[in-house]
Length: 131
Ligand SMILES: NC(=O)c1ccc[n+]([C@@H]2O[C@H](COP(=O)([O-])OP(=O)(O)OC[C@H]3O[C@@H](n4cnc5c(N)ncnc54)[C@H](OP(=O)(O)O)[C@@H]3O)[C@@H](O)[C@H]2O)c1
Image (cartoon, rainbow, N blue to C red):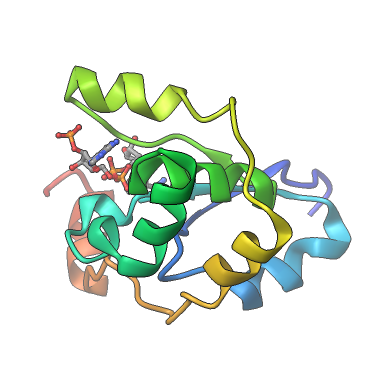
């Protein structure tokens, strides 16, 4: 390959932090762009008690803590939101910072749990525009 990719788009959120692939691309200085950054709205992730404790300490929501974690990990993050209140909330994450200790706590939440579980056959159909 002659042209180095600038960004790698992968599912990535606190429950699937993708440490293996992040290490793999590190030498190439490729930006990780996270899709499903809020776990596709997973109720368990968005009510996680550990994140809630951090959220309460900052007077922020769990979603805001997750998005701030993405930013401080150096990811490019573009959450999906149709609710205007969510959109407002999701851009209000630049007036606080997570401490090193809080970042370490967030990293412990990884359990390699991914929410996008499409079969190869379904992916083939999607690629062919038949989804
Ligand atoms: N490149 C790829 O292969 C790929 C694959 C999958 C997805 N994507 C893209 O990645 C982006 C994000 O995906 P996604 O939207 O499915 O996942 P997401 O951003 O992880 O989650 C979106 C869900 O979280 C909810 N949400 C957003 N902000 C919230 C908040 N502050 N509090 C509580 N809930 C909140 C949304 O609800 P409301 O809608 O009610 O606000 C929605 O249900 C999309 O643009 C999608 O197209 C790319």
